[in-house]
Image (cartoon, rainbow, N blue to C red; front, side, top):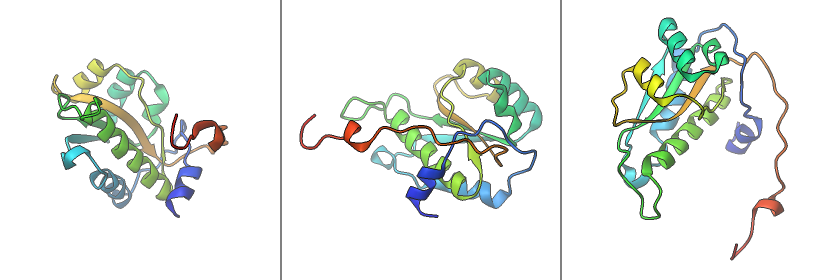
Length: 168
């Protein structure tokens, strides 16, 4: 599979099979995050892989989206240096973790696994469940597992609706 095929084939999965994810597939997904670019190559991130059933149940409650608990793994992407700001004004951790999470999601697709990017959760509750220090930020969460659904693609805008050349 090439990158564009993975991008076109990726879907947000909200139903997962009761089947464990092989360690080698999980490691490939995590390796994709490790190799992703980051501002100044700071790699100011931590990825929490939650496999324990009881912790997954508590985390699912903190997230507030019950389908998350169906997946055998939940990955929590954390920024470890939230004070760092890029010259353009953007916090480095939000950009860096968005790239890393996107790389993970695409590699998961390559491995035949499903994910669903989550940005809606109670960060304080997630931190409490996982023992994340106050100064660390939770940027994204995704369940990871074998899909038990095949959603149709969502409509996308045409290129001429979102692209301009040389000026806005």
